[in-house]
Image (cartoon, rainbow, N blue to C red; front, side, top):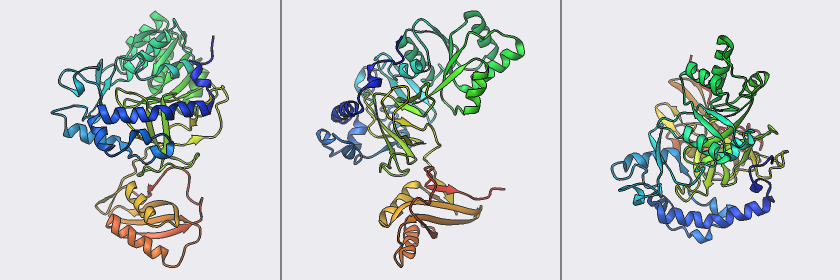
Length: 420
């Protein structure tokens, strides 16, 4: 029995990179031809020239709030806002969608006819699930795609699924006792509820020895708590827009990227890639012709880990979810955005990185831009303070620190105010 879902997981990294970049121009062209919204965003771009990461980095980042705003604006004509290349009669080309789902916002996402459309099988396989096993799936099957995402992945492996959905703890425990599933797929918090309720009531759930969890944080303390009770849990990182992005392996060292994903980590509020190891926003281009989102900003923070996975998988790894990239703060009645901090930095090339710290008490806010600068020339602090005022319409102080002096946590705006 193979430890790997397929041979792609152990490809030579250079061969993988060449294959992804060879497919990139076609995906950009597909977005321009089949997605009116992406065609507008990529207007003037020669798809044939997007053959490198440097070329990709020149394209605009599409962030989720922008996708939502366009969907809302065009809902009467196209609930997808022009982003989907598939739909049904009267919507997005008139054909190709098998299902449509709704995420909070609401944002509508299409599902195409491809098997394992969201590519979740790779993550489920890495968590130890195998053909002919029974999976108890407790992700929602209502409105949102989570249940369907996981079920399609499990079916691609050859598993049988029980559609548990969310809630109804007693009924789900009865199903576990009656059906004796080999593993669980769902949120880690609900698995903990099931285990605790089983201990309280004496329900038999010992058949569950593995779990693939997602949708929320999976701290090591909960992982160890489940292990003490005979369940090995592994996490995945996926979104309804992009499908699987990365997944955990038995090495327990970060999350390995999915094979259909071109990942970038960019400085929040910009489209500028950061150096490997630096925390920034996760931006993905997924090779999905049905929903061709180019440089989709997830709004999540992470960082690339050095070196290959000890399991033998050769794709890049990320540290996992490290917070949210949208750090917008309201200061003295005005919204201050990460993109504004990025514009301040762009105006002053002496600044390597910067963080805007908002301190004091509500209604008595103070802004301080902490800037990494190697050698600050005379007048730089005053010039930066002027830029702060011009861009944010607010006054701010400037404080210099040597390169590397700011924490590597992806924060561009730090709200350090007292709310007591």
